[in-house]
Image (cartoon, rainbow, N blue to C red; front, top):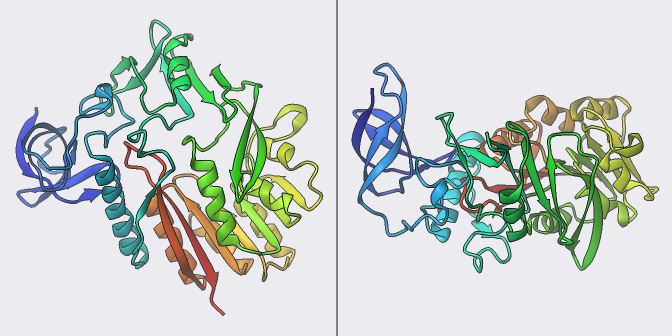
Length: 396
């Protein structure tokens, strides 16, 4: 049974929805904008549900920030991946700013007074053509498909305007066995590579420029790398600035070593930790990228256990800095407490989820760390995702 409601859309909520109210019940509305009056169809109008989810079916009073979706396949009722495409680009950033502020205030008691910065070139490209990494599941005919959220239905893709042109062309042209994952990567050198399934041995080369210097990285096809064409440089520049002149750097969730390599190149004492599969000759990408830097150590292991072992060894981090870039779920309390037990002078946290950051920031405060600076970046246009970088200092 379905139910259609007339709703006045309220503020954005974390996850790409807005909140509306119906007879005292919260309704999370997809495809709306704050202030709009809409008709929306409830997914499952269970009478005993604490809240409902609904999708806009008709806009009765439109917001001035509503625009035509640039990727019709991903508009309301379509595939996922561009849930804010109906929102003007500047308004998308205000939407994300609202979510960042609410998250930090609610979960950490932090008042965020900054903004959400655009990545270089995004305004000129209207928030499109930024993804250098895209993936999709092969359908019955072997072509790339994406799912309609919550439906189990998959559509064969006709376009992928969020991707750089080379990646879009490769994804749409790719064929694979039904059900196989198709992954496409376009590197900073202009090489485009298509992998089908896991365990691909192909090594890709990336280069990142920050502070007037360029750094090279090798990583396996399908391995994590920031998807926005400008994100590695934007985040690296911010982390370098916030870490300052700390002589020791502990880089956690290091990936291929985006942050570790530049610090190692400066001759700093660097320990980088990543729990990852092995690379060629038994080496991880991180270990390969840090080879040749005598002051750097790459550790293939669990973050919390590695940090706990460093604490047990009574290592001195009083003048050092910890950089962490955890997964979307955050580092979580036990790992944050382990990091704080090292007593580093500064902690720089790169977050792709503001709620996870806020929860970990609260734990840091309980461990004696105060927030120094926070800055949010719009590295995922057309989606609700936002990247945030925060620095924390140990209270004397």
